[in-house]
Amino acid sequence: MPDPVSANSAGLRKIINVDIDAFFAAVVQRDHPELRGQAVVVVGDPVGRGVVATCSYEARRFGIHSAMTAARARSLCSQAVFLHPRMEAYQEASCQVMGILRRYTPLVEPLSLDEAFLDVTAATAGGTLAVEIAREVLDRIHRETGLTASAGVSYNKLLAKLASDWRKPHGLFVIPPERGLDFLAPLAVGKLHGVGPATVKKLSAMGIETISDLRTMPREILMAHFGKAGVWFYEVAQGIDGRPVQPTRQRKSVGTERTFSKNLEDRSVMLATLQEMAAQVAARLQVLALVGYTVNIKARFPDFTTVTRAHTATEGIGNTDAIAALLPELLDRAVPKSASVRLLGITVSGLVHVQAASRVAHQMSLLDEILNPQ
Image 1 (cartoon, rainbow, N blue to C red):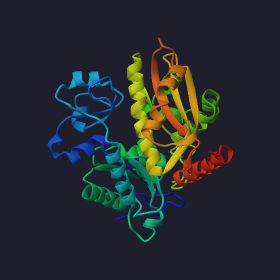
Image 2: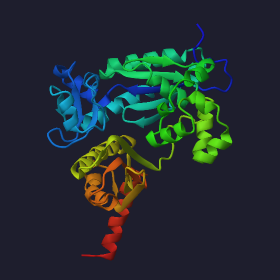
Image 3: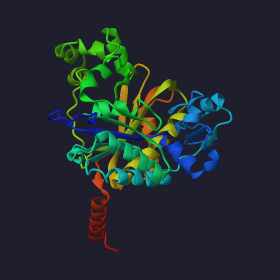
Image 4: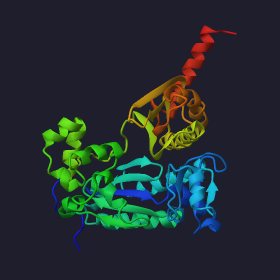
């Protein structure tokens, strides 16, 4: 049986994208069997004005989705179970999963607590099939953690990521080199990671609705409209993605953002949303053993104007409380009292390893003792 991602395709990598299904909600249902089969909604403030972080597939059938207000979710499914996030449990589950992935290759690049790329090119050199590795990874995740995941297998990150979304939940999909262009052609441009509503609207105005349409546009025209991003659009349309899997890349920042289907007008909901994001960012920092020195929030208004505001601390910031403490002031600086927003985001930058931050703190303490003796 030939490997679907052909070993005869010279120079092509064999990439797997693994994505845990409905991660936060799945951990809850795993740890509380009585909630299996029920609509579970994970929200920062279950009884107040929180925003949905994620929900189970049972809840999604009612139209509930992430970034929706808890009030709206409750109106769609009154029998849903609303729960507060349990970041410690998510971190533990994430570490388990990442440990499983590293049994197959050292080339594992975590994208978030619940998703990672694997480069298994070397692991298939002896004749093992990439799709067999992916299938074994999914089985082992389920057996050892009680969670289900989906996987995509292809010859680059772009297609592996798209493939992992194709048969969720607990699915496996392969896009071999000879099918890459045909797979991409009918997809809406909005399916591309990072392409938001504003870009979709701009592309649509140019007559570009699908990746097949995008493929007809010369590189120069795309660059004229989108700058450097135009090169990316051109290469994506041709199925080109040369990014390697980078397990030890030097990160400049860790962050998350959400675009809302309906503009947020209530400041308490804005703050609750940012606080939930802070918990997610903090969990990611802890998994990576990093702290940062600058917290930055991003706000985009209905006219697509975008502002950022930052606070830089003298001590490393790595937990939810430290990030959340800065949010009220940053929100006030970024968003006028009467304004609404269509996007919010948090980024922590100025990253260092936890051990390095401890050394800096120790050195600062010694310096303080020298300069300010008792």
